[in-house]
Length: 169
Image (tube, rainbow, N blue to C red):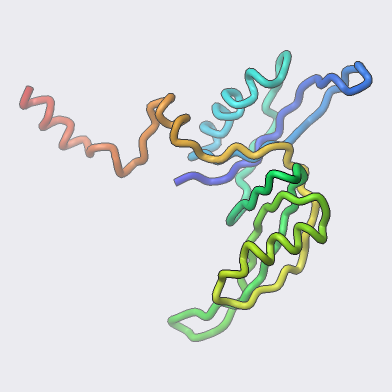
């Protein structure tokens, strides 16, 4: 199971006017742990960023889903609220979830999140939409896992089975 992590890196960036400036930029990465997130950021950005860069912070980020559109490169964080009934106590409670959507304006982000969530069978409201500082998102990829020989925990045989297989050889 992958979680989302915001990894903040610091490096020297060449600006459009040819000058250099030390910047700190956040990237969103799907990974299994803090260590895995750090390793992935080095893999993903190692060939893209010229020179050295340092990871200055990693935080777990609660993102329920991401809606990407090719025509926009600004990410908006949309807070969505809906009522959920507890089956045991039959009480209604408010549930908040965060979504990321790419758009060119707040209005467009609002329209896109409403369209994306229109298939839900529950009424929802969108109490806030803010511009996210995220530069780029690196989702989970099967190819990356194959490259580093990572497998889900349920695909790994328990230790007892491994010992039995070794004895049979």
